[in-house]
Amino acid sequence: MEEVRAPWLRHYGNVPAHLDYPQGTLYDAVKRAADRYPDVRAYDFMGYKATYARLIEQIQRCARALRAIGVRPDDRVTICMPNTPQAVILFYAVNCVGALANMVHPLSGEEEIAFYLNLSKSTAVLTLDQFYPKFAAVRARTPALRTMILTSVRDMLPPLKKVGYALTAGRKVPRVPADADVLWWNDLLKKGDAYTGEYQCARGAEEPAAILYSGGTTGTTKGILLSNLNFNALGLQTIAAGDCVSVGHAMLAVMPMFHGFGLGVGIHTLLMCGGSCILVPQFNVKTYGKLLHKYRPNYIAGVPTLFEALLRSESVKDVDLSCLEGIFSGGDSLSIELKKKVDAFLQAHGSREQVREGYGTTECVTASCLTPRRFHKEGSIGIPFPDTYYKIVTPATHDEVPYGQVGEICISGPTVMLGYLDNPKETAQTLQLHEDGRVWLHTGDLGNMDEDGFIYFKQRLKRMIITSGYNVYPSQVENVIDSHEAVLMSTVIGVKDKYKMQRVKAFVVLKPGVEATEDLKEQLKAHCARYMARYAVPTEFEFRDSLPKTLVGKVAYTVLEKEEESRATTTC
Figure 1 (cartoon, rainbow, N blue to C red):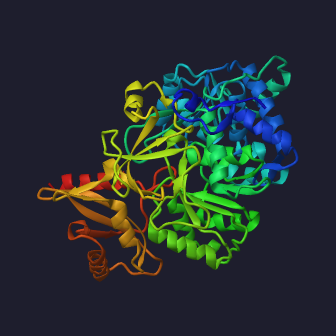
Figure 2 (tube, rainbow, N blue to C red):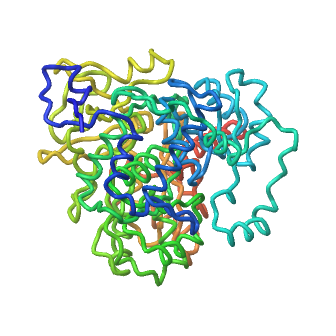
Figure 3 (tube, rainbow, N blue to C red):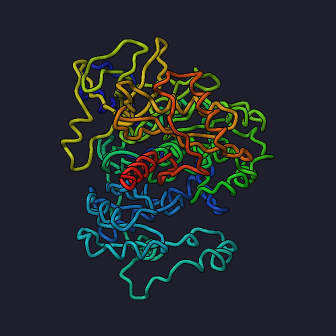
């Protein structure tokens, strides 16, 4: 197998290149796994199973079909799908023909869809039949779009489940007009059968492969351009840092494919190493326990709110988790207390493992730092992945701060993005060449590093609360609140105050059966006063049954901030 020095390192000759990465594409990486493990199960979707040999056949057939409908190298193809075989197959087929996959959440609104299609200049899109009305509504405003490919969940179901789907959920799907200008999935594949020309495009590791999007909780949405190297390096790093990934072992792939965590770890890492993906199209707390019972996966991954939901779910109370070899939390900050509760839950249900927190940004695909297996330091998000470097700097500078001091987290390594799509200004602000000769990703997140190299995340730079001139870190306040015996989880925000500039307010979800009373609010305030400075203690506690979430399940604290702003305006 031909290999080259990682292009990231090659571009900066003064940096010692100690790791080699395979030259080639995402498809090439999965093809190598298929050549080695042709009879291993690659994925399972509601009873429909495919081996690696079968998966490669499906990808190649789809790649021929893409060429047949005119998709060419460097074209962009939008995939607006839940976790289904069609999404996996098309993702690698797009890569095989040298095009770029533009990953979009299927629950996006019409205006968001128009934005994603136009920013990427997508020439084709794949989505479910149930989402057809949204795409039809914006099609006239997306001039680059030539082909709309529609599929149904039933297209990849076993025969009996196809019948069941048609009689239940399928009945609720609006009919697509008979004269609609669409290409159905099965008709697309037939075009692949008839295509006899060359379809595979040789691409380099450093060339672009996919577009993901930022801005889930803060900031303006930006397209993040990621290369083949970014994904393939991530896979190799995750396998090494995970220290638990084995051929044939299965991941319950709940995190969605439009998200770096779901795509990079839940799908590509597993398929690079001969693992198996149990594709879950939609997360549901009530059915999650059934999935754990049925499939007995070796790995599960999710955002903290997923684990919080599990602790409240009746469906997992008697589940045997001795099958678990890796439990990963990412996408948002896992509080110290929630980790303790999850670890206790795992132990009580037969698992020898702890939940392992990771940290990263979509600008480096997903995680770039992970808690070591069966070891952690309280409050730490772990140590950097192999061949990934972390630096803590004074915000708005390149000046590294001493161990233990809080500053902006910067990352350098082979998973760092190529840049923001058609946005050189934002790219230049985020990717900066430092005096050490490396390009560093300025994350906009605050944290610190100890003398052992363990990283501690505080929160986003923009989320820091300034009250009476003091800096308050919401995650630290949340950790204290979550440690109270009555609390399941909390979120803290800054609310405008004409005297203090901002005051601290906490939104609290209580454990099942705990009554929300004014007395409990006073208890929480007293509890906080015991563990933190007076200025950091929330002046107000509001009980909620649940907290607002982003499309990937992160706590959407900006929604709470907007609610407070609206409330203040109304009061005035």
